[in-house]
Length: 105
Image (cartoon, rainbow, N blue to C red; front, side, top):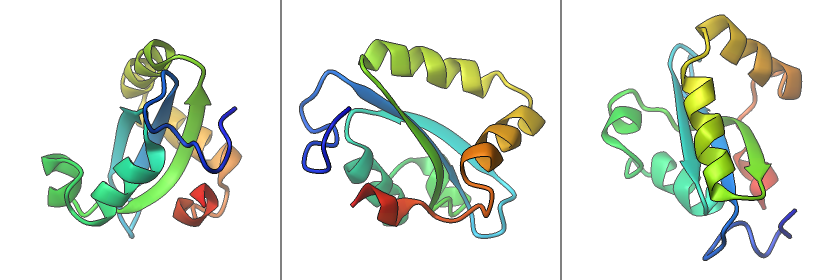
């Protein structure tokens, strides 16, 4: 697992993450090699058109994968899940549905 000083910059590993808005009505699943940088982009409205449009600024869930290809496959898997399953996954790790941004530091 990467250290707090190497959270994916220039690496071959990857992260799958889930963002939401303050009301927790919309979810976005993404994949990145640089979790801190990517979440920061979402928070600044620079992440993606979808996350900007729906104000998805809160990181609710993330998982690390040894290889970026594995992370991409997991992202695709999660995107095909039912909404209920996604919420179960999030709540298992983050029952209070808190923004996990600070845990990346």
